[in-house]
Image 1 (cartoon, rainbow, N blue to C red):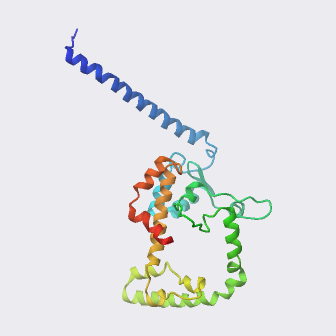
Image 2 (cartoon, one colour):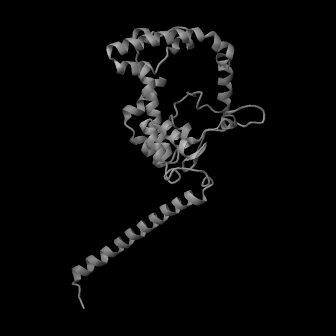
Image 3 (cartoon, helix red, strand yellow):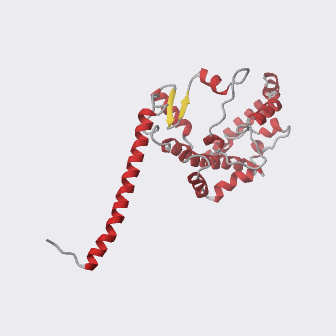
Length: 264
């Protein structure tokens, strides 16, 4: 029978509680995670919907696609393989049916507005005194709809067709020039932008003709990318939770400040 010396016995007695606590914590964590996986796979309200292997378990697949800028292709893959209604994350369904568009986005008597999930509302962090049309509450949304409804009527759009066609012609000519000079990168840049100043403000910015893209054109693009990173934090953690705020804090200031600059 082995006999421990006093110092060895003291060291052993000090270590044992730490090991017990460690293994107990590991067992609790494993049981908790395993329980969540089982619940999301078999007992969750969305468990009956078709889905890829990992999407009901974790938001990581769709978050990874979001950060890479490939989320539309991820959803297309899911629909092509699993059908018109797919579970793309633990608490989210994606629809690819005509009737779904009207059911979700339609408005009218007896049709309540579906409020956006905090994941999407928070995809753009709140800016004081700013309410965008895509993130507005019911009152602001109604006011903005009334203000913009005429601009998107069939008559108004038909009246502006000649403006769009004029820029299509300019765009086509520029593409030919870029192709002749082998400037593929500039062609890629110009395809993203129509001179919306002519339609929205009645005065063109001129960046299609002059190739002067101005500071705010890349600023909008960078702001969209910043919004994707901010939405990713809300997909990985509950919106407004300490973990989500910590993930938001981890975003480089250069990215997070871009969108704030856009609204100033």
